[in-house]
Image 1: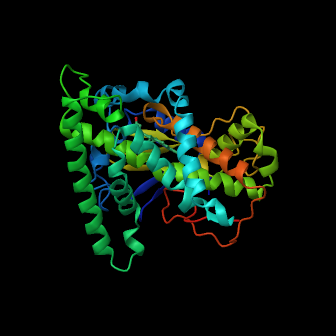
Image 2: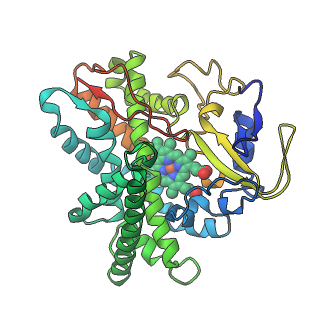
Length: 372
Ligand code: HEM
């Protein structure tokens, strides 16, 4: 598909699909021609994604200058040096989760570790009081539930709408509290920021809190799961157990080889030429990161999992102004979790050979990963 049709229009979905590395990069770099604000789409008639979701009001879906100002509010909090200091607390959360399961020598890496870890870490960073963390996890579970495959899809959709409404109200209260009495957490940073000499509008402040929560959870879960699965399949566990640098390289290669975030969406704001095709204003474009990351024009022997790939210029965290703000945090969480996991289990066996893929074309991961 990639070689024959690097870029194609699918009349059924009314969408441009972009499969190649260079074109993906070109589109993500040109945010003026390809906006992240999907409300600018005119030429497609399926329901607009993220209808009613606060994601719509977040940096993910904004253009400059608002994007620049809003993202700048928390940029310093995500610098690699700042994130690195979170190692002890991420390690403590990981230990706690592993202590709860390690006794019988069996666990589900997704359910017991990869899923709860990122929620716990971001909740603590945001400054959610521990007494509310169960409520928080419940909301996260609900938002991740796949309505399409539920017995009663309408009920799930309603529960998701209710969860969003409740979370929004929760964050509004917390933001108000932190304005009155700031502490050092991320909600305080967002609540007290005054990029234009005034506090952020409620919707923007809430949208920011919500995107930090939503963007980093299932993606990091999948990175941890995809990593362990790949290390096991490729016979790399022993080699990686005590070699931190190699583990870093291995996680980078998993990001390329099994990219947790498979696709990004954009809308053309003006006429554009891509690979000889003319994209019209208002048309919807999907860049397929998973495919770009296996483009033979960019990566030598792309179907091979190679620990020596250098440089490894994958696009798993995106590219350009929307490059993942949480990339350092995701890398650190994955590293700490995998190091602890490899350290605790003398030998690791995958106990199921039939793994269920996560039910979304935009995500790559498995719903469970039982090991013994
Ligand atoms: C944006 C992937 C973890 C916060 C993005 C984008 C990608 C991505 C591809 C670009 C979206 C676009 O251009 O439309 C991932 C992957 C992760 C991960 C694969 C884990 C392995 C995290 C974490 C956080 C986070 C842990 C924060 C706690 C964000 C935010 C944005 C973003 C705020 C929007 C940035 C902007 O629009 O300027 N992520 N992400 N991500 N990510 Fe991540």
